[in-house]
Length: 486
Image (cartoon, rainbow, N blue to C red; front, side):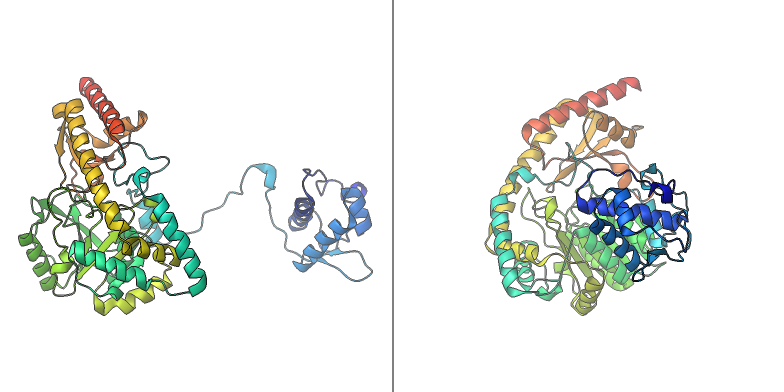
């Protein structure tokens, strides 16, 4: 072999099991053929010679040659040595060279380009740190109960086969909960089960909007919705808020879609009162607009009973209601849902299938049992009491540690609070300084479409009292240092 292929094929191999050694020999010969080092018409040594010089068995060499022949790199004729086929020469980079061939990346679509340019990150990278907003406390979740539901669901699925993308039992159980606790009005088939609330919002935007359509979003508002709207090439307009929510008076433009969070405005925590809700529904009906009602964390309400969902007041079939289990249970559940108008159920089910917006059948069946057995409602009651206490603890701790450097809004529910910064303080710089000391916050300015205000969005649900006290002290100390530098 050295006499025949010296300088063309690297004969040094990493000691591996026989399967990996076969792959190494295959890769070396294939690379030599594609690079032109073994030109078309070159007759390879016999299997006996190759085995001797590679120091492997003839069976190993035969397996390599057979594979090369199957893929068209060599031609094998009975009684003759293999011949290199006429394969177009390619410029290759050795696998162990530690570098890649320079080339232009594939051109991406306008949709992907819009997503890439978005500055909204709706996941937390790495291990969550205080006070990452929107996170439930996984330590307090009834994991054993949920595991039991999953085990039973997996066994039942093995017996029952495929049911469809929207599990009837989950639709029925979830609708019963939403009717009782949120006052929605719908049939079970109107529930579309998705992998997250974000997925549900995107699905609605793709079904309803065309490029150039006008879409309204609250400002400040949920950045993930802005990304979904912009990705459809809609014209996205931020609508300012007053104490009652979306400011509608004097609006003459006519949007195709309005995104809002009426029960617990994101991120201010304001509640849209009944008069403004009626005005919004009337405005949408007159403009021919649809409304996406994002009820992202309405399960946790601390002061009185939760208000009826906007969808429950709608008489024109224009409200899409969106919710999620990632907030009420744990983020790993990854299940959201949307209630869509009855006239569009068939359309959404078809789009759902064609875009693979589906949740595994076992997860849906487990959720159906978790809700139907009362475990979900029990968990919500327990966590509402716990989160109320943590909200109060963070309010008290921040007040003591930061004083008047933070203007804090006490939310009536949810999992996070808003702390506004003083004039001239850049919330992004503050967030960056907090990250250096192991703390997480989200800047309020990123929630605005247009001229921003500055503050910190701080989660309290996932952190116990000791963690809350320690985190508040770090925030207070950091703000004091920043103030001295100014």
